[in-house]
Structures are given as structure tokens and as C-alpha cells.
Figure 1 (cartoon, one colour):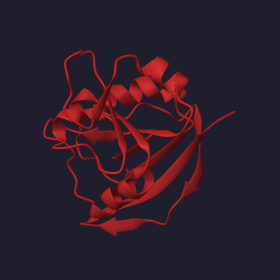
Figure 2 (tube, rainbow, N blue to C red):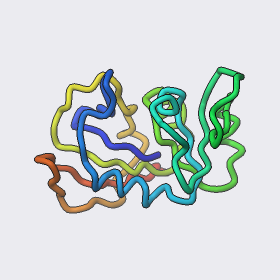
Figure 3 (cartoon, helix red, strand yellow):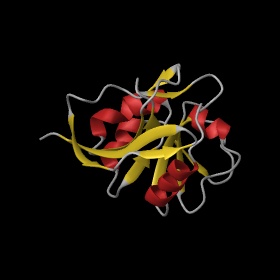
Figure 4 (tube, rainbow, N blue to C red):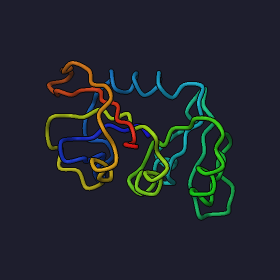
Length: 153
């Protein structure tokens, strides 16, 4: 799973992601390039086109056609259990919540302030431990760190 979260695990509000961190966007692109990504229907609706150089899967109950370049997933549990190669869960909040029991690693960009979000990344502290942590970064007045968590055995 990959996400940027504020200091309350917030990921978005009713207008979308409330911060602007171009270096985090580049980090996301670098990590997910050439991979399979799974997103919720809300994230799908926000995208103008599929993320390039990736297989784009959309968790949806709607059996209607998705736009070109997007593939439907109607049963996330079955999809994740059947996965034989790495894939990235990229949001939103409900998709993160449903996928967390299947996640081996969390790549989180953790911001050091509260952006008063209304959508949140699920609580994970009991099941995961910190594996890697960057030095503090500052961009657009926002201090953040890249952290990687692994599932506890």
C-alpha cells in the first residue's frame, strides 16, 4: 500500500488531497511505475486517464464498463488472495481499509501537521513495524518523512 497521510492519518477531504508535494508525487510514480495498481471507484473518478506505465484496476460494484485502460475488480479479497506478483493499493480510504489485512508493506509519506481531513488511512500500528525512515524533508512549508512499515510476524 502507498499513501501520504497527515499527522492524524488523514488522506483527503471533500475537495481531494489538501497538500501539494511534488516530490511525493515523484516518489509515488517511481515506486508504482511498471506495476499493477488497485484503486477505489472514487480515485478512478478523479483520474482523467489511467496512470501511465501501470496496470490500473478499479474496485467497483458497478458492472458497467470502465473507461479504456481501467480493469474492474468486483471482489477485492479474491483479487488480492489470487495475486501472484506485487501490486500497489493506492486508495481511497475504504479500499485501504479493505486491503489492509492483505498488505505486507506500507509506504507512507507522513506529514507532520494536521490538514483537517475527512478521509483517513486505517489504523495499522498494532500489525506493522517501522522498517525504514528518511530524514525529514521540507517542501512548500510542509515537513514530512518517507516511512516503510512491514507486517509484524
